[in-house]
Image: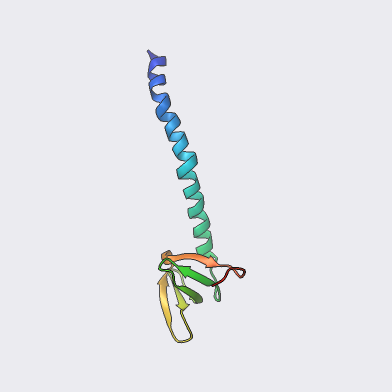
Length: 92
């Protein structure tokens, strides 16, 4: 009876393993790299916000970042809304 019980749970265990390696693990890795990118932001970096705005960092703070949208407009942005950092080789 013990072997029958294990055999009935085997498909569920296999399904969980597939979910872990195809969905959960890559998403955790992406979250870690995004968090590291947010921690590494410094003055002068170009970023793209989740709203699609391209801006330059004026002053990184603990929870917020002051960004310059153009020569006259400086706003505060929550760190959670930084989508990505624009590297030098990319067009922005």
